[in-house]
Length: 304
Ligand code: BEZ
Image 1 (cartoon, protein in one colour):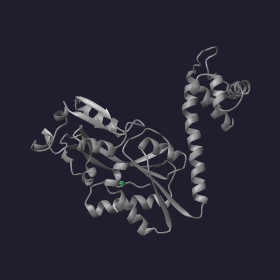
Image 2 (spheres, protein in one colour):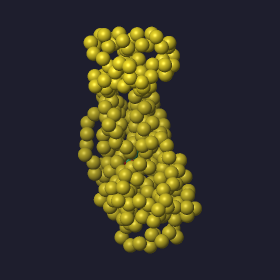
Image 3 (cartoon, protein in one colour):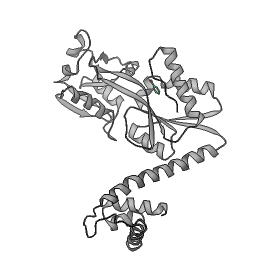
Image 4 (tube, helix red, strand yellow):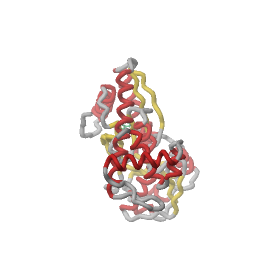
């Protein structure tokens, strides 16, 4: 069996149609059908139910599809990492979600670069789901994101959980509330969530936290990014929920109030390709922990 058989089968299984799969693979349909037939003969089992339209996978086909994707992901990782090992210059590409810029990211990168000046560090702002793809394609080596994922080719290390806070305009009625806010206080509010896409995103994390507390806000408006949400809050157009480090973004017309609910937290995760054990990543993780030590931030240390 060759890797091309896996690629062909995944295209057919995803498109549920030979013509569309052939178009996607830039090949003609008859040789594609022959390759799938050859694959079934090699395996000695049917992967696609005979005569089904649109195509339906057999139980063996579903099993093969899941594992074929994992194998191709691993091949892609192997390629990216071998290229990385083979390169003489030392580089570290870091993906990050915008909110981490207001947390410890700048200090961590500065400390890392002071300790390892020979490593060329580049920073790329991208959402957590974009980081997953960029890690798999070798465009970044590590992603600092906020969403947990089930992707077997990515390892995510929890760095810390950050409390969520509510950002409000200074004359909002909730500003005067004593002793912090509860999610249930937001029930009639106009809530701004971000980013609108790609999903899932921090917007879904906020909506899940509200859902867990059985709270449905009055109106939910999705906006493109954090800065837009903050600008609209300043304009009195609604409230938004942000990780507490965003409070470092001082805005004349925005005030922050902590959320007291026990589950109103957003994680910061360190995401890497599963097999990647390069010293750059171990050293970066050590830089994160050394900043946490200096600031007295609690964490559970992990090794790569
Ligand atoms: C933090 O704020 O804890 C953090 C931000 C970015 C990368 C690592 C940690």
